[in-house]
Image: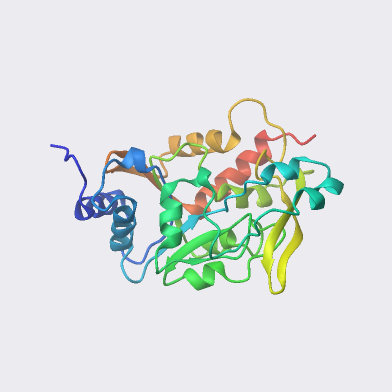
Length: 269
């Protein structure tokens, strides 16, 4: 019989059945609503994740940053410095996670053992053995590309753990966008105010368009299309964690699959 509330031990057992092993490096995407009620709430979910990977394991989550001024980057570049004059500067240690990435990411960000990368767009949180190695010296431009935490995660044999997350939620595919052999790819320039040594600083970030896609693509989000087709190959481990339909995916494999899919299906302008 399904319990009214999942214990941390029961959730950990579910993760083990899915294939999580001690020492794993996991990037986690989770819907708390899909998992269901857990002892300790969101902290209880993180406790179960930490128990599953053990003391030699590592957890990684996409944090991003809350940005109430994101609309400014839709305006002409010449107008942006004036429009951003009163904005709160990004501080990697204090700025909350982007609400779009979910409650679990914000809870993970604020836990004592979590370290965070210093980037207002591509901020990650990590805890465990490989946290420093993953998060150090993030490229300012192309923060999901070569030299990024995503590349390090893939090269370190990381796996993606999805707990009831939407099909279009697979951050590691942004790294695949950099690898896909198609040209041209849409790029963007964003202005962000960040906390500097001597006060707020206005800085410009250049990168592939990780909001609207590297090319126009009609219909469903192409990340969702890629993941659906990847799961159909049977190469992911699937199961249920709490109440959440879940997948455990080898990051390098889905990046290779995604890059090849993009090369075949995305048509540059």
